[in-house]
Amino acid sequence: MVNLHFDCTGLTNINIPNSVTKIGWGTFSNCTSLTSITIPTSVTEIGKYAFFGCTGLKNITIPNSATKIDEYAFYDCTGLTSITIPNSVTEIGKYAFSGCI
Image (cartoon, helix red, strand yellow):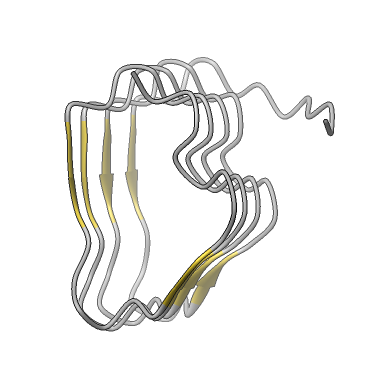
């Protein structure tokens, strides 16, 4: 297992601009206070470990533009109660949602 230490624990909300097309490796990992995220329709890929350990996330809507959710993207997001994945997503990496109880 990769040990990530981004730990932006004070971050509670994210509004990603429309110019972003990929949420990269470990971008918001271990942001435990993050409860809300708006993923714009410009995003086509959610990278490895992007939201790893974001235990405060409650629900996520993946936009229709997304085609890939990479490995461990939402791993250990134990607060997740709802996720919407559109038909446009054709690839979900291993363990993308593991530990989401």
